[in-house]
Image 1 (cartoon, rainbow, N blue to C red):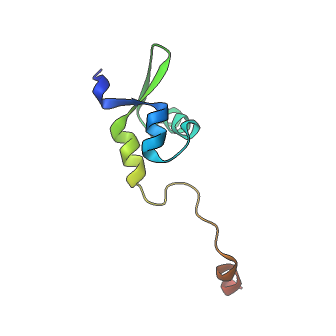
Image 2 (cartoon, rainbow, N blue to C red):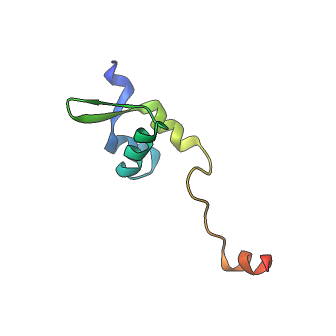
Length: 72
């Protein structure tokens, strides 16, 4: 295992712009690579960086009041 390829959950969260809990969820679901070493989760840095580049990942933004009125 090349440790230079990994970052901590906190660092991955900062890179990806999400919470550490979300990073743990992504690792648990297999959407992000990670390993537990000596009781500490390490996440692949490339996966954290890739997460940032995926547009529209997550819940869609809620439409504005004006947009909802136009749909009626």
